[in-house]
Image 1 (tube, rainbow, N blue to C red):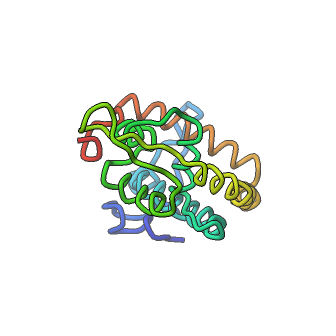
Image 2 (cartoon, rainbow, N blue to C red):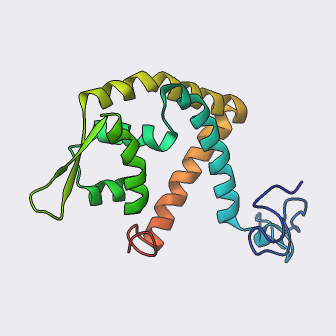
Length: 186
């Protein structure tokens, strides 16, 4: 089955690779990827597709609190750290500055956080307000319901394996190109 992000033209590959198998190895336990096999599928496109599907599940649950997953994640992060600068928060959240600003704006409008001048004019500090703390706490059961929804759909074992694999991948890939390098980091 070809899905968005898996087919020709979605990732620059000649085919999705989903319906193609691997050839047996010659003497070791690892499968050899064929020229038209899974190696031609774009890993990033598949990961982004899965991420968007997962985000839709969380957003669906959190909409009852008037939040998106990114906004809930931001409120949660702010509740666990000393008030960061905008730059530090963008690094913590893995967002470029303009995406962070767009995400913060509706939260500021609701009075859930304040952005204040820092020690100098160039720095701005982001602070979670008491109302923001309460909004996050009120949304936490909805986030937990989303977590359970994902576990139910994928199964507990597969969910745990996916989390472990993604943590390893992030660690390895961050070592290859640290955050702050490239188009998002300037």
